[in-house]
Image 1 (cartoon, helix red, strand yellow):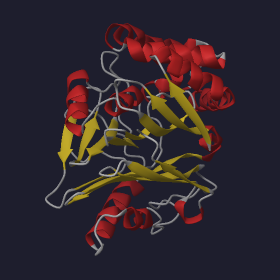
Image 2 (image 1 turned 90 degrees about the vertical axis):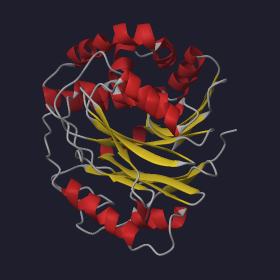
Image 3 (image 1 turned 60 degrees about the vertical axis):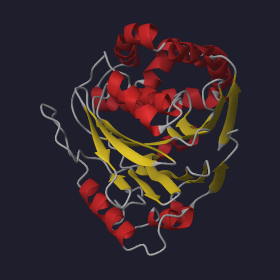
Image 4 (image 1 turned 135 degrees about the vertical axis):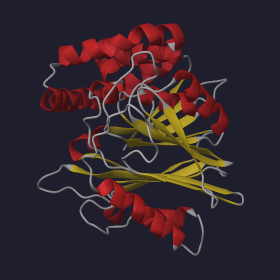
Length: 343
């Protein structure tokens, strides 16, 4: 996996990202142009027009992200409208994507683990990058992301980490922060509490679950275009989530097309409850290799009917500010990365 190291002003960070990952960004655009056309029947020009509806909000309240996106555009030689569309991909699809991720946070004593399998279409695997950002005075960021997207899954130098679960529900609000920029806002925060407050104040534009944790533990935020409902850790310090709403969201219409979501949620809960060693990077990594209910298991596999599979596993130890990432399905991963150069 390519590592892209960026530093400086938001525009400079974006420019370096775009320049160093230009090939991956251009391939990602081809992938999403085809995917949007198949799922929504929108042309790429229409996709870009939808994404541009977020610009008034972003320019007024989140101009540093606009500057970074502008830098990605300049560095990659890709129109800014297309880079914006990549970063708004969740909102444009209106809950049509069917990635099937499993995520958990587990805090016991001084140990705080945050982890997930990220499942998506295998064609996009070659366009994943490791993005490292140094951005004084904000925390440094180390994430795995799709090239061109400035916020995704990983952790920062303050020990704040984020994971993401897609949820298929209708509705989008152009007055709220898009999902992937919400992830970045969490990573620009110095604590779980700060990140949670930022998202509660800004709102999130579309349906998703964002799991935020730091050395003090985790909290889940079930987001829709009209509300954010918190899922606090249980009495054992645990939060788990897959790809459906656990809490009520009045007025939100959910499309539960992944019947395995509830099965995976139940399975990860059982694996945690029977784990005698408690939360360690090794025990949690082993849970995410689970293949019960294969191929739609926690460790998901591609089939003739679905090209979605686990593309990477990440296990973060937030009390020590590092993460272990395995590329590919955890049972037969192709590469291992350690995210630990945060200071």
